[in-house]
Amino acid sequence: MTVGFGLAVPQYGRFACPGAVVAVAREAEARGFSGLWAGDRLLTPLSPRDRYPGGDGTIPPEHRTFLDPLAVLTTAAAVTSRIRLGTSTLNANWYPPVLLARSLTTLDVLSGGRLDAGLGLGWSRDEYAATGVPWKGRAARLDAAIDTLEAVWRDDPVAVTAPGWSVPPSHIGPKPVQRPHPPILLAGFSPAALERVGRRADGWLAAAMPVPLLADMRDTIRRAAERAGRDPDGVRVIVRANPVVSGTAGATVEEIGGRLRAIAETGVHEIFVDLQLTARDPAHLLDLAETLREAVLR
Image (cartoon, rainbow, N blue to C red; front, side, top):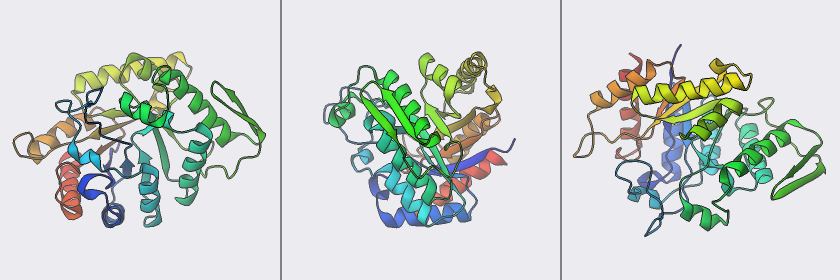
């Protein structure tokens, strides 16, 4: 199986500008990268209630400036024609589900059917508070939101009754280009999150981690898919890596490439790298991505 190799679209820190988005999107497609991926951060609290799930637990200062993921991907869609466009990860609970369905449908339509809808729960209670969404019950709300997305994308007329919202019998159009809907990818590492992936997702948004741990989590997803009567081989695995190259806290390109190559050899479907914490500018970002891709896919 050929492993896809993508990269995070410019979105935050020094890369939060239209020129970077356009330049990297165009060149990523020209160089044959498989996908452009956008994340979803809202704020950086001065005294966060939750630790950042990476590094030493400190939120990177670059995250203080963060562009909207769907706006960034729409900009990328306008200057490309083939490369896939994904969210990794959109914090689904922040958005009213019917409005989220419309926004995602719009991106799928405007891109000619290139959207991968990656959804997750998020990790910050401060961000939930800022959006006015209860932290408690977030997993059940995510399941209900996915039900609503699928109904809006599939049905005509649409009718939804869910805790917290309802849709009277209505026509909602257009429908996505991809039928029955854009691929729904789910993030998460807890047993409940992995079970949800196997039960209902088209793919799992994973993170770079030791191969044995990745394999154990993937086995959990496969078992859940089998219990749900689904083909476990049909659940894609997309791995995100946020490497920092060289420096005191970083690793060499060769070391990073070796780790990612070991992950690729487990049979994942795509790896993408977010280099915004380490690249100097768009040209440097693209060159680093190219070097890592060569190291992984050689």
